[in-house]
Amino acid sequence: MDLLPALETGFGFWNPLIWLGVFAVALVIAYLIWTFGESGYKRGTEQTKPFISGNPEPAKGEVHLGGGHLYWGFTEALRGYYDRVVPLHTGVLNDYLLWFFGIAAFLILIVGLI
Amino acid sequence: MSLVDTALAVVLGTLAMAAFGFVAGLTVLGIDRKLAAHMQARIGPPIRQPFIDVAKLLRKENVVPENAIPWLFHAAPVIAFASTITILLYLPIGGIAPVFGGAGDLILIVYLLTVPALAMVAGGFASGSPYATIGAQREMVILMAYELPLAIAVIAIAWRLAAAGVAEPFSLAAIAANPVWGVVGPLGIVGFAILFVILAWVTPAELSRVPFDAQEAETELAGGLLVEYSGKNFALFYMAQGVKTIVMAALAVAIFLPWNLSDFVAMTPAVAVVADFAFFLAKVLLVAFFSVSLIRVSMARFRITQIVSVYWLWFGVLGLVGLLLIVLDAYAGVW
Image (cartoon, rainbow over all chains, first blue to last red):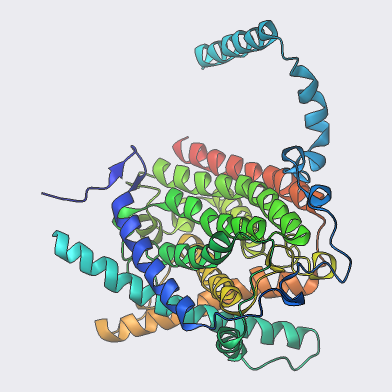
């Protein structure tokens, strides 16, 4: 009897217990290397201030990265898509249900045709 | 396999792969630096320089910024290095089958590739530095960007192998045993060549190398998500990058260049293991040269918005073209 069977997904497979075992051993190796290194530093000196190219550190609130900007770069690059999609989010439940039923009907039609 | 045998395989396999990943990874980084230097008409550091760097970093102070979350700041490099090593156990190394090829497939590898990147993101956010925060935010965007072409390449390969009647098409051992070039016609070969190029261009983003290194961007963010890291924490991130270079190159070799020397030349099994291993290292170096060294020397850094456009629009469309050619090739074979 296989005590640690892999999970089958039809085509794919993986064994989470094996991965956890490997990860645990790898963590021990990494931790041993980490403990081998120097741990000391000069606490409470200029050394521990964040490096901002010599500029004074702004207030925490001024450099806080809000959730709305977390994916900036992605949303900016695909602005043509987001500019069309974001206005569709009206916040009205009826609109969302209409979209849901419309898309579901479209998919059923496609699946039916195929 | 009994529980004791499995436990032994886990411990010994992980130790062996950690040693291989450490030595091979840092050596490849050294060769990359040497080749890049020669292409820029410089002498460059000796090939053993990454080993010297790691030894020196381990002796340097390990500064924790005052705004940092210390436990997360320390845990991130340890997790990044450990999670990168785990991927090596699912990849064939020359003529040696994957240590746990039956315990994880290509989809698992694609997921595991995100773990070191997410550890770097966590470390960046835990640094409490504006530069590191921006770097971590960019790393997440880049991660999302290159997943699309990578997923298209993986799905296309597995679909074509399944269409050719290969059992377990997502298994690395099955992919290595059935070279993709042998199961397709001319259209499929063009399709796979496109996917090979896409995988080569995903590699520098996975490794945070130019032109996809907007998350570190030395000239702009002074190192980005690694700006506050020093000493042994930075050494572990550096070692993780070396191991990841081997992982990406070994993945490309397993999928697109799986042949062994012993397939072509008659030799004893003992010699075959050594010859196939040496041949594997040569292929890894070749892939690393074209997908890391050559690209980073010949290009400037993309802006973060350009990176998303490159991966989602250009490589996304190119990947779909490759997929279409492979599908047409499969149906042409049926007709």
